[in-house]
Image (cartoon, rainbow, N blue to C red):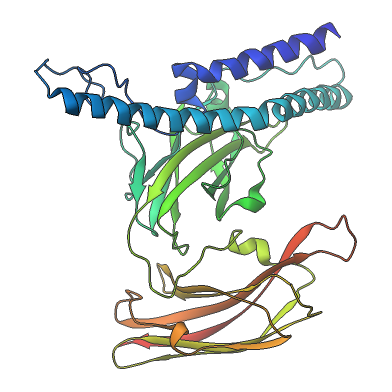
Length: 386
């Protein structure tokens, strides 16, 4: 009991430290970089500026805007804390107990597990460049709807460098409707985008990892991003980094919705969809007309809509030119026509493989306790943009 209370005390101390600036910068950054609105001598970059006489009305409005932004940031952090503190405490206690027990069983007299010292992550940086900035950007980063980069800097223990310890690196992007937890037990099924790598290793004390986000066409708005770096050897050690970013820019007119999950989530062992036909033609004005037909197995009224997506792929790029949701009204349906003709796709001249997909959510079985799963079917068509 003393050991359990000690571990819980340590956890609550760690959770409390999330409110401290140093801890927040390392793990759970405030969702927005907001300066003190009452300090008129601090610039957006944090540097002191010379005092000057300001317009009283402008100064007051600036303070009000700053307080509104701080209130929003505190509300988001409060939401995260209230929904995760109890679960995180139980997960940590149970996981640590299981780890100690398993280690003792595998290695008799191996001693108690100790968390690695010197393992730290900085907040994820979202940029349009494949090269990470030399500093952590202040404030919310803004990127276009597609083709941008995720960077995360990590510090490793010296013995990991000597061992060239193997790592897994995972990135997830969530809409603002879902705030991910600062734990490796995240609900990744809610991610709009997911990418991972199992081929990394520790070669230096300080390293930066990155991933390119393409073929997703995020709609304008606010998103959360998480990165999980974990060892792939026993005992497994992992840390989570979170941040927030904004998407601004125009998407093709054929992209109307976001998928409720990342596209690979819809691939299942028991598909309920069959794409029976898929065609694509290119007009003289370069507009792409997409059409096709699909069959929904076990059709019934009130089932989830069908998501139709078309991705143009070349040797080095993926561009989503169309994504729409079609209500399911009968077992066999078709799509096409003006609503599925896209002229503002932005593709340059050349030949592309157009991957046409149909996807839907459904229950895994007829039982009341069945979990939600998905199905996907696809076909490829070759197109040439003149």
